[in-house]
Length: 411
Image (cartoon, rainbow, N blue to C red; front, side, top):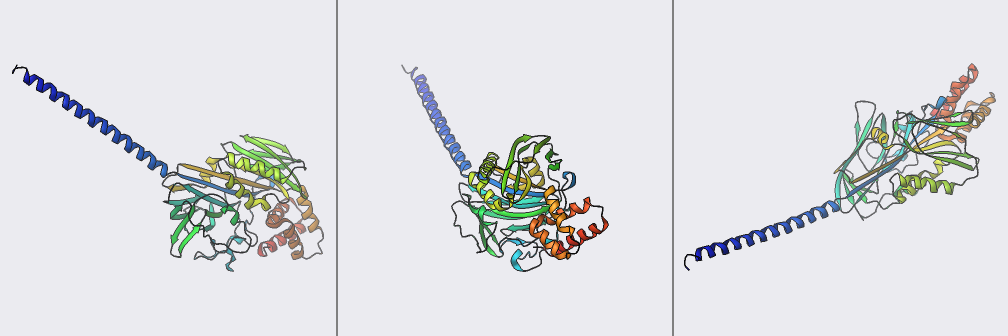
């Protein structure tokens, strides 16, 4: 009997050790699963979504090649709290100071890119963007301009705080502006602290001018519009639009790699249907519905004014090449929807200008002001195109005089 007792004790001891180890393993597994759940929850709470929209506007000259123009040939409607090159210390274009941008010529006007942020909780992020072959001209909130070694600029907002559901005490002025509709979204409030104190906005705003070519060449050839894709990326969406005396027509084409040829749009359509189609196009490219509506509302009076123009979605890789964007920590989702807008000089426009130039007895300033009233910021490039096409020496002198007057007396 005594000889079997040690064996029994050993058996019991082994069983107890095994049970203890099993309990430890179970507890460790439970702890690991709990930790994993916490990590997943933490990752979910760190979700950061970033959306951006903006416009690249250019004018197609002879053979569809972009021509230089003054993107701000007139008074800006931006609020005075927006920063610009005229006064890096803080005053905007309405400050009464010299408008540097008014004297700059470029191939492309980069209009109102805005960057929205969506997060599950308050977080701090750093944001900077670089404009290849261009210059940043306006921005808000306050940021630091970065001058590149080549003809290019960047802008760095440094650390900004994303405040989901934060107080929306944003600056506002009574004068109308294209600036404010961009706030009509569900994006988080952004807070930037700098030497001026605290600034809040619904988005990061910036504008600029570029010397780069758009990835699409558009020209009017014998009454038909030829659009040629010069990039290695497909053009996701394309719209050819025309407003003739308030009569609207447009055509939509989906993805194309090389070239499409279209007749000028027939009148009979409505702006309401165009806005619906355009809104659906923007949403399909990654914007939220309110963002798409805000973009359309921002540029409704400009996009759909009198004239013939093409709109297209800039391929994402092209956007990233022209506008490299850096955000830390890296967002879980980034949508960047840039719309290219190309103004097309029509025979009707040329005839109007030829008619204005025909009477040589009229004073140069009277003719220039008439053309500027009719064609706005596109008057000067249309005149430059007319200058290229005529060989009449007297007419060339007169056109150049009108161009000089238009450049020194913006409307």
